[in-house]
Structure formats: C-alpha cells, structure tokens
Length: 181
Image (tube, rainbow, N blue to C red):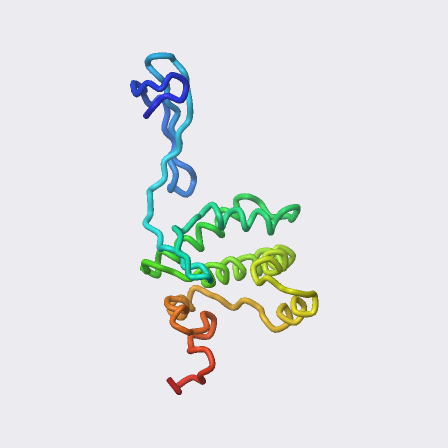
C-alpha cells in the first residue's frame, strides 16, 4: 500500500479490525520510511450489473448514488446512517441475487422507493417527487394516491427483465392482460 505522505510502498499493517457485519476490514498502517500512520478500508469487490438508464445509456452500478439518494431523501428525518446503510446493502444484495449483467434504472428506483416507503413516508415522498419527475402538484398527488410501492423480495422474478415491456411490479407485459401473451 502506498503511503499518502511520502509515496513509499514500504508500509506495514499495525492493526486490523472487521466491522460488525463482517463485510469491511479496517486496517491501521504505518509507513516504514516516514513513520506516518493512516487507515485503509477493504471490501470485497462484488460484480454488479450495468444500469440501463431510461434514455438508453448504460453506466456502472453505483452504490454511492443510491446511498446519496437515500441521504437526500432522509435529510433532517429521524433516520440513522446505519438504517440507510442497511437499506442500501439490502438493495445491493437483491440486485446481485438476480444474476443479471444489466438491470433497468427503473427497477433500481422502484427498490429504493419501496425501501423508503417502509422506512419513512416523508423520505419516500421526497424521493418520489424527484424520481418520477412530476410536472405539477395534481399529477404528484394523483400518483401518490394510486401508487404504493409493493416490491418485495418475492417479486424478484418480475423485476428480472422489465425492459422487455413488462411492468416491474406486475410481471405482465404492459397493455396485456394476464394469460393473453
């Protein structure tokens, strides 16, 4: 590991600790050359799918974007960072469990909204108001009255390929009744 103070690669680990959930290792390091001490964090690099944006662009999955979205929605709400972290981790694990190479951004957004809906209704409304890009208050109120996120882990099969014309919350092609495919 390169020393941030003198750029030497001659460093040693002084202390290692694993966090409570066991998915992160904190290491205290010391540079042999300059004596500087610093902390590093290790996390297993998990392969995440590419996110398909609504305009068709593709970009790498970003845990930081989801975390940031949660933080903005939960600003000045009685939600702890640990609760946000747990929700982000749950979404991340669910996405990994699909085993897909690509996932629509709409599916990720619906997972975030579902999690926020369970966590804090005000945070959910904040996120939904930005995520769904409402043009006026009437459209916002109507959508909130009609839509209540119902995504559960059991719906994972329905979210696998919503970009093939399926409604991710219903699992049927849009505009078609069940059984009429």
